[in-house]
Length: 115
Length: 503
Image (tube, each protein chain N blue to C red):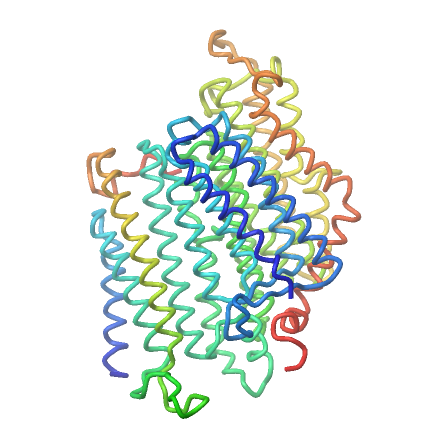
């Protein structure tokens, strides 16, 4: 897994950036989604992959015995997933409204506010 | 340990929730919105006094000891910026009463504004990097909706760019957080600072510097530094002026705050590289911003470019990296947010009077609205940095700090950019206020009077009064800023306040 995951993360980032650079509004949104997935996986990998027990203190003991998995990165990822879910939902609605008011999903046509 | 530290987050939250409960009563929402902002300002001033008298305050949320729980920390720098959020929040809340149309108000303008203030105050207070990410998102989400609220075509186009680039910055921030956690095993800022400072537990400088560059990129997009600022002039002039004034005063400043925080507390191993780079970026940000501004003919766009150019100055203070330089940066942030928001609010009055923001079509405003012109002049000259305005003292102290450290190039750039700032402020003055208009349509001349339109004018008067206060009260005000600079330069104070002295 230590070798597979970096490859997966790298290709997710590559795909995300490719999609972000396309002209279509929908592809831009897909790119943003992939970007947050890649970042979440990166947290997961960078925090260390271990094959070990859940960090639960057994009844008989009063503190954790290593080796145990680190729960914090997973809490971080969970938070990040929830946030990116909300943001993506908003971005979808925004893209739809933008499409309705500009009448195209071509980002090159959305230049009237550029300085 | 002071549990009331959470008040600057709690008050906007309660105000927003109360507004949401009264969603169908926009009139009531307006007054709750204004009084909520007023209470926030009072609490912010109390917090500033408390931190000034008793040193850095910290509270462990849920009583989980640091570094395991989330810590809220208020040092003087945070407290000053929370006062800034209170001042701008109150001014914009009053200004919005009439200037934001009832359509927007009935779709939740006031709750969103207070969620934004909550996110901003949270970001200023938190002592945990992941928590900072969460506050960023709270703030961004509110700003997304505020920017798009109303659904005009320009707003949609601006919002797409704003949302995309800010989400990109969040993704970079998140990736940096993951790598940092993998490296250090903690995200508590004080704990990180302690680990990186002691030679036994510090990872190699090269890795830390590479990580710091990820943070520079992530916060740089939010702060709109060179070359990451293109979203700002494309989106900031699209929403109502009240929203722009709030954004210009607070959002980019949160990016600058985060940069100053991490580059004074955590990433101070490789000063030659990181802080020299910051100086170079500061110079380029000033120059590109002001050149963009000079080329504009639309009042709000011109002012938007000035936001970018003024971001360079606090970065210059950070790059110089002395207590004096940081004090100057803190004072500068406070001054520039006030001046900038005042100018935007004035541009809103101009837009209401003449129905346009185009400098070529404006003119002759000095004749009918001499007092408005005077208010503009105070804010504009303060932004440009003419004595005895607050901008003069801010730039003077930055230049002093630069000269002491022998950073002559950045000092020269900052002075040159000041001249160009003065030039573009005079351009607005000449075109909008002074120039005779030959084909002036008499009927387009709106009337505005202090009695009838107090909600438009009172916030401007209030902000100008605060500008004058920090200009003429420079002695005591700068003393607080100097203390803030001292605190920023001694991270062990921060570490001790969070982790306790016993460790």
